[in-house]
Structure formats: C-alpha cells, structure tokens
Length: 188
Ligand SMILES: C[S@@+](CC[C@H](N)C(=O)[O-])C[C@H]1O[C@@H](n2cnc3c(N)ncnc32)[C@H](O)[C@@H]1O
Image 1 (cartoon, rainbow, N blue to C red):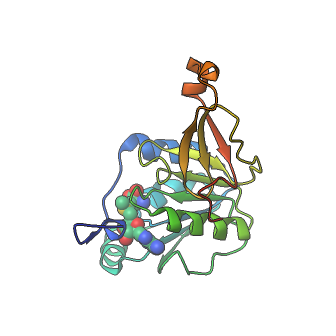
Image 2 (cartoon, rainbow, N blue to C red):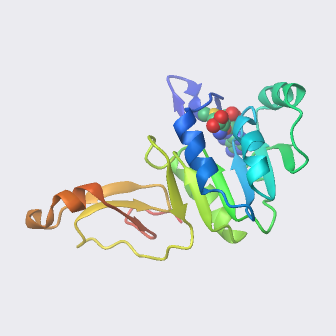
C-alpha cells in the first residue's frame, strides 16, 4: 500500500510478543503452516517445534538473506524467497499466518482465496482489522446479512457495522463480530 510514495506492504518490521504468542498458541502439533511475509523468520523458528512443518515465504531478499545467515533454523522450516501472491502454495497446509497490517484488501482477498483453494482451514492475521490479531475459520460459509445488527468481518478483508434498527444495538452486539463471506464490498 503506497502512502506518501512508500510501499508499506513491502516494509519489514516485527510485531509484538502478544501477537506472536497468539499465533503460537493456536498452532497444533499436526499443523502444516505457511507464514506469509515471514520477515526475519522469528515466528517461523519459534513455531517449528510446535508443528509438523513451516513454509516461510518472504519476498524481501535482503531480509531473507540476513535471516538465513543469522539463524540455524530447524529442519522442518522451509524458506522461500518469493511473492506469496503468486508462489504455488503446497497442498496440505492447515494453518496460515499473515502478520501484515499494511496488506491491501485486494491482496488479503487473494491470499484468502489461494489458501482456500489448497484446503487451508485456519488463518491467523492482523491484516483485516489492522490491529490486534484474530483467528479466521476459512471454512466459515455464513453469508452477510444486512438485517443483522452489529460488526461483521468478511473473508474479502472488509469489515463494517450494520445498524438496521437502533433498538437492536446492545453491549453484546457492540462486542461481537460475525465472520461472513460475500459482503457488499466483496471480491472473493
Ligand atoms: C510487517 S512485516 C512482518 C514480518 C513478519 N510477519 C513478522 O511478524 O515478523 C511484513 C513482511 O511481509 C513481506 N511481504 C509483503 N507482501 C509479501 C508477499 N506478497 N509475499 C511475500 N512477502 C511479502 C514484507 O516484505 C515484510 O517483510
């Protein structure tokens, strides 16, 4: 995403420990993980002992070279210097990690579509809300409902709030997010 001439999506910077801990805690021993935009591999290296395999995809060659020179990374981490928007995802991936707050909505939708195409079931990301981190069930088929009051977050990357009837707005609707597919802003 270019803002003031800077492509922030292309910039490497690490996230906070809470974000990484969330990603580590949702991983299961049988998971095959793809870390999209893996940066300096700091999460991939920590994830490796908890799962079967980690595919770490990072397109910034300088970051990858620095990271691979620094870490002796475990055998079950496979590093690719490639563009994850086009790199052929292997079948069998069960968990994806997309920690990339500046990911555009179009790119988010593309990552989600490609992950679904290879049967990936879960996605850990901070790219949809741009804050915090969430776990998305990629098998969710719930369709957007314009008459349902409250927050929604769509697999295309859009988020929003519906208030068809102000009487329906309660503390519960304010604190709850419904995960949906096929919203009005949808591209997937
Ligand atoms: C904000 S950094 C976060 C790095 C890592 N996820 C972390 O939490 O430490 C985002 C990274 O995603 C990489 N990136 C962005 N788009 C990418 C793409 N399409 N394919 C591979 N890497 C990408 C950038 O080069 C950058 O290193």
